Length: 115
Length: 108
Image (cartoon, rainbow over all chains, first blue to last red; front, side, top):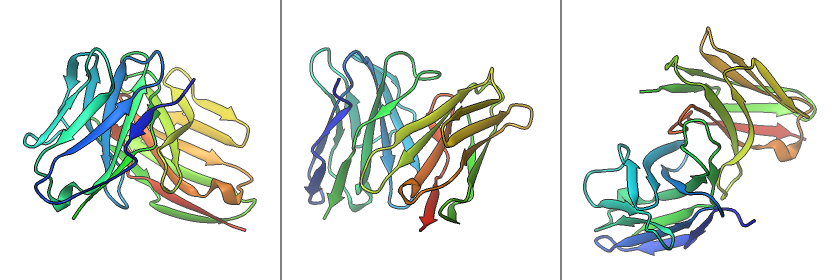
C-alpha cells in the first residue's frame, strides 16, 4: 500500500508565477489536509478537504491560495502570483475518517522556492 | 481554538540516556494526542499516539504519558540512539494544532 504521494518534491517559481502542488492520499483515504512549514518552524494547518468538499480552510490565506480535491485525481494546492514569503515546505496528509481522532499520514512534502 | 505549547525547543542527550519532551494544551475537549518524528528533508512520521481514555502507552523505547487534569502530555525516549536525532512534534485532537517542535540531538 503506497503512502501519501506528493509531487513535485521541489518546485522553483519566480515572483508572480503560479505554483501547483499535488497530493495523492493513501489508498482508501478520503480526507486530505494541507500544512505549511517555514524553515525552523512547526507545521501550520492550511486546509482540510474531502472529495469535492472543502471542510475547513481557516488556515489558508484569503488571497492567492486555493485548494481542491476532485472526485477523480489528486488534491491540488494552488498558489497564484507567488511571492518570496511563500517559500516553504508544503505537506499533505491523509486519513480514513474525520481527522479529529483519526491518524493522519504525511507525504514527503513539496519544497517551494520563490526567486 | 486549541493552543499547544512544546518544550524544550532543543535537546541534546548522550547516547543511552533518556529524553523527555513535554506539551501542554488548552482545550479540555481534546482527546487525541499523536507524536510525530521528522527527519531532515522528510515528512512527519507518526511514532506513537495516545487517546484520552488512557494515561500511558508504551512501544519499545518510546512511551507517552497523558495528564488530562493538568492538560499536558509527554514523550519519553529511553536508551537513545543516534538515529533518534530528529525534530519531534506533538499535536492535540484535530491535529490541526501542532507544537512548535523539539530538535533532539543524540550525541554518540
